[in-house]
Length: 159
Image (cartoon, rainbow, N blue to C red; front, top):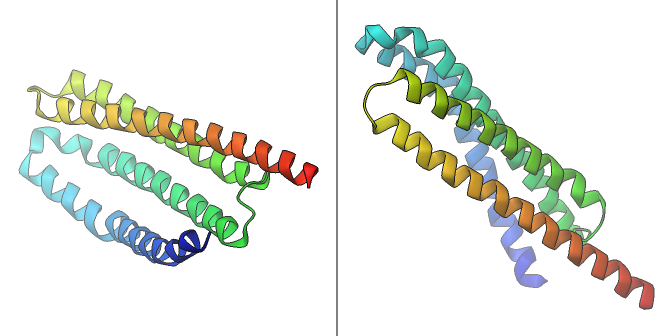
């Protein structure tokens, strides 16, 4: 697995940069941006705080997935990815992504009722579809990891 080990380092660098960017977005970008939007659209100003809370929670979900991925990368590097311990992190990723998807679906329903015009609801619908596909993809990958872990245990038992 040398090529896998070479990819772990750069991936970790990218995960750190992504995590830092999400923190900056949560603290320095989202609050003033939503305040400005509330000033520009006074009839929708009441959505400033719910939109901020929703955005921050969604970004926290992404940060949780990043932390879990970081831990899984450590297991890859140590050659322990095909163990039961990996499922703690994979299950956390699946659960976090499901929560984020559920919140996105709720936002779609809420915005579809509230907003006139198709723009934002269509955008959210696309995000809900993409998010659902991503959650299901991770569930399939989890099943593949389960099969590989079982095969690895069987092989270790034979050897």
